[in-house]
Length: 279
Picture (cartoon, rainbow, N blue to C red):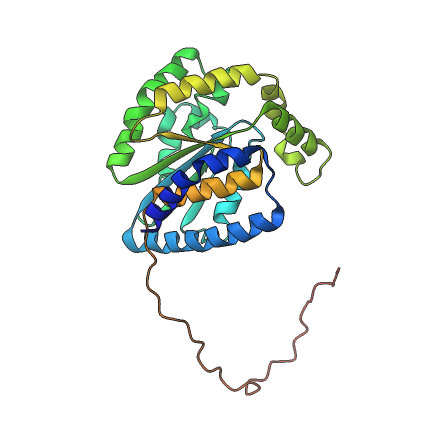
């Protein structure tokens, strides 16, 4: 199985990956390896559809850790009907009155789906706790009830993968500064990001306590070093492929049929509103 081969590859390359951690991956090499992994993700997608698998992937990490880029790398060549990305906004007044996991549960995968959470119910153990949007009692209660909640999800057939992207303080500073004057990225720099930036140790403490309480045999946390975003994306995808066993679904080779003779149909005299060629 492909998953078993990828797992073996991870173990064999463990020391090599650690040695390369401080080495930036060249774009050409990244694109070459990513193209190979995209082929495998498509195979995984077809297997998930065929077997009715339910896969739930959680991405957590500090602001600027590279969650969005990792998710984009996973999803850019697969079907959005199978790979669904969930990035919930701040809860509404009504949602704040609900049982905490309630707003997340409708988004869990059904058969034949891969759901990717760009931040998840773990907001309560991270940003909500650090920024004071929940009480300490609520945060600690969350960490008590989350392991059995996730165990129920796994026992129902959901394959649950939890990834934490670990970025250094120096690299986080570089990335956040880079957003300030970049019109493509300014939307990524919210007042919350700026406020949370000053609380590095608070977030570290919250992360450590979260790991201690919710890193379980049925739903472990996997950590990826993300100072090199390209390398982190490849490592996460490789690991993901190793954790969801799959086979290539046999397909008949596609052959295009003969096209009807062109010119038989005559279009009416219609003035198409073509856009102006700006390039």
